[in-house]
Length: 325
Image (cartoon, rainbow, N blue to C red):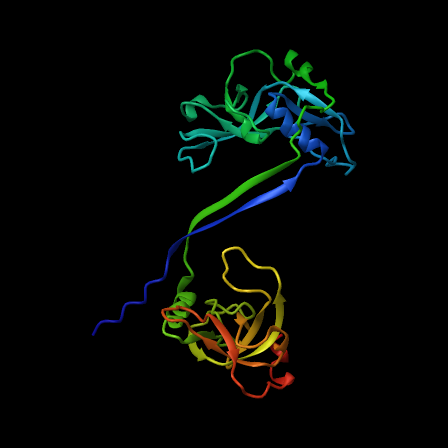
């Protein structure tokens, strides 16, 4: 007799992406506009140090700092790491080094890419210079990368004198940026949530009970966060439950075909030790209340409840769910 094979743990590619929009203060505006114009600006702190990239507040005194200076497009590598497999949207499509470069005239280092033929060509202390992008828009990518540069400047040499005052004024300054954030990875819900998801596809809700405190976690986590022990005893809960708390949503989400206003609630399924999230339907939004008894509504082919609707039962007594708020 052979033991049954454990169920396969689910895995799937997942992409999280969103545009991050922010406005720029006078210092960051001058820095990015300067890059567009082929000028690297730093800011001088109260003790005379030059920070590149510039900060808006002194890291020592927390005072606002506005004194801009121009530094050289050449500098010295202070430390580095080789990137043999560039990812999409990184500065270079071929292997390169991530480097911290202290530009001549600056006292801090700037992180960017160094175009080098291999790790043997990179060393701490090597001299480099900015390679400007062919088209510049007012972003850190206006520096396409750094490239090796043989000179005899050095941080303590003649090139250090290139830090000169700058008024930060440019025609058509950059006042805001939009950064496209994206994260690609393979997500696995793990053993416990794989069993939970598979049960949902059968229109069942399964949690796991802690052998110590006996709380039933839905969705299961694989371990009790209170007792720190594994939860392997599976328990089917619901399908009905009780609304513990809720909110009324008045802003329509992009790509979500649900008319506002609608209600999103915490629902304690019968037999569960904590509440899960769910949308409430089948009732006017202003009639949803704490203690309302609800049941899941499934769509054809759905792998999880589309929403929850009232069961018609009397409301649950507050004492029956107060510990689950």
